[in-house]
Amino acid sequence: MKFLLVLPLLALLSFSPTAQAQTGPVASAKTANVVTTQFKTSAVCDMCKARLEKSLAYEKGVQSAVLDVPSKVLTVTYKADKTTPAALRTAVQKTGYDADDQTADARAYNRLPDCCKKTNAVH
Image (cartoon, rainbow, N blue to C red):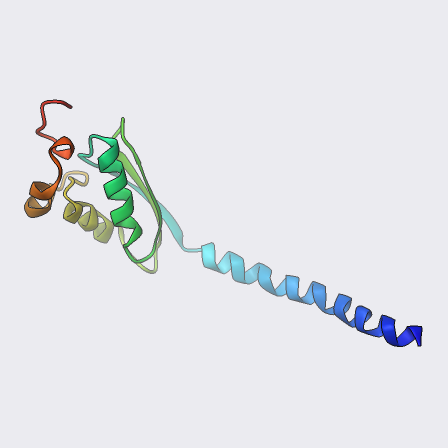
């Protein structure tokens, strides 16, 4: 009778290592094509930081976007098979900010709050 109670437990334990072994390679395959790139922006304040990070979060393939306000450098981690640095640079421009040597989209720049404009005398 005790044998019948132990049998399901043994069966459960025998399948446990198999399930763990199968998840290992799948997880590494997902992170194999993740790339990080950086852009010099015209962002000047914490409101710019929030705006850029939120905007890039909606871009396909982007895993994270972090702006360092003092250096004005935006670091983007993305999946290389989903997007490109050129597409990300365009997304930054369409948000209203310069990206490296490319100037911001004029309409988007005009919609920015005054504190976020690079011509603002406060900054």
